[in-house]
Image (cartoon, rainbow, N blue to C red; front, side, top):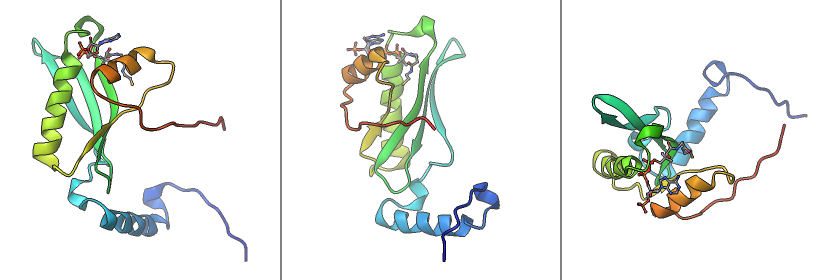
Amino acid sequence: MKYIIKEDKLADSSAFLLVLKARYELLKKGLSDKYCLEDFYNVIYAEYDKEVVGVIVFSIMCGRPVCWITIMWVEPEHRKKGVLKKMLIKLKKYVKEDITDEIKFLDLGTHFSNTDMQEISEKLGFSKQWINYRKTL
Ligand SMILES: CC(C)(COP(=O)(O)OP(=O)(O)OC[C@H]1O[C@@H](n2cnc3c(N)ncnc32)[C@H](O)[C@@H]1OP(=O)(O)O)[C@@H](O)C(=O)NCCC(=O)NCCS
């Protein structure tokens, strides 16, 4: 008997129930489901004169004590004024107080060519943890 490998949209797929089961099994090893915000991206934002000038988009990874930042952006004219720093303080407070104190880490990634972002991250107290590999398909 051969294995047949298929692809489909998750919601329409006959694999959906197994995905739910796998997720349930993984969750049992980690945090409670109620802390899983993976499916709903969340945002912390900065307003200046009623205008939104900065955002951090983040999610809480299912079963892991990690808040994962997917987007950080401050409008060019508002940069180097501590806006990101303020949003990160708010993010930490929000995660710890409104989600769960079980979240222990804040993770972000940047391209290795983005040396500005590496410098900014290290100034803000982040340290290198992962090496990502990519292969062109
Ligand atoms: C990255 C970004 C969000 C930083 O926002 P910001 O509000 O300017 O950052 P802050 O003013 O809070 O600065 C945080 C720290 O980084 C330093 N910093 C800010 N910009 C810097 C730069 N271009 N180079 C080096 N250090 C920088 C600040 O001096 C500060 O350090 P300090 O606490 O030691 O003084 C903003 O530059 C941006 O939107 N960049 C384009 C988008 C981007 O690259 N996003 C990240 C993708 S991974």
